[in-house]
Amino acid sequence: MNDHPLPDPYGVLTEPTTLEIRRVLPGPVERVWAYLTDSELRRQWLAAGHMEMKVGAPVELVWRNDELAPGPGQRPDGFPAEQRMQSRITELDPPHKLGIAWDGGGEVSFDLKPVGSKVLLTVIHRRLPSRDVTLMVGAGWHMHLDILAARAAGEEPMPFWEGWSRLRAEYDRRLPA
Image (cartoon, rainbow, N blue to C red; front, side, top):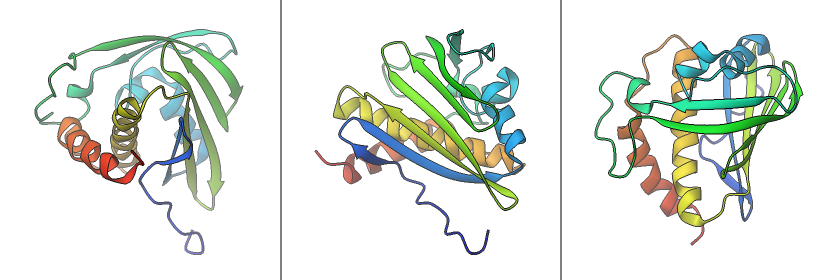
C-alpha cells in the first residue's frame, strides 16, 4: 500500500448531482463486503436492515445515528432519533459491487477494490436533488465512513453528530455554491 496514496477523505462532486467519496480500509475485501451487507455489522457504522442478496430485492434501512458511538453529541434540530428508508438492490457483484436505489434519495453504489492487504471503498451517491441535501449527504457519508474505518481498524469512533456538524460546515465551504 506504500506506493498507493491515500485518497482525500472528503467527497467530491464528479457531476453537479453526484458525490463520490473514497476510503482505504483494512482487508480482505470479503470482510469489508460483510460490513456492507450484514445487518448487524452495517448497523455499527450506517444503518440496520436485512438484505436479500438479489437484484430487485427490497431493503429497509434503519438509521440510529445516536447509537453509532459513545456520547452522540447534540443531534441537530429536525433530525429524528430513528430514520427508516425503503430501498432496493439495483446492482450486485459480490464481493465487489453493491448498488441501492434509495426511495426519494437517489442511487448509491459501493465499489470494493483490493489494494494489497487493504481495500479501496468508493461510494458514489447519484441524483442529489439540491445543494443543501448534498451538504447533508456529504457530511453524512463522510462521518459514516469515518466510523466504518474506525470499526474496521478495531478503534473507537468519534461521536456521530459532533463530527457531522463539523463536516457539514466544511462541505459548505468546499462545495460550489
